[in-house]
Amino acid sequence: MWPFRSRAQKEASAEIPRWCRILQELEAGEADEDAHYVDALRRCLVWYCNDELQVDPFLWLDLAELGEGDEVDEEHGELRSLFFELLHSPTGRNAELRTQLVKLIAHGANA
Image (cartoon, rainbow, N blue to C red):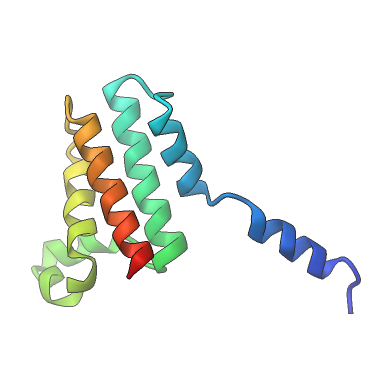
């Protein structure tokens, strides 16, 4: 048994998740340009899906091409829609998109 293992695990669990750090930066206004802001929103959504839901949102792209996505992943439909919207690099809607992401993440945390 490794004597430092439990301490390392406790320290790792106390760390703020990477998607949460990006969200905090966005709320602080650290990404001013539209392109950087949307990219940060996209990374936040992808990392949230990967880390918290164990879902790879890039698989949604394959499902959309096959026309099978709606029936396969109904559980994450709103996140999926936002992911596709962010891939199209919308401009001028930073606050709206951030609010939508925060709402979906909060809903997922409460579910």
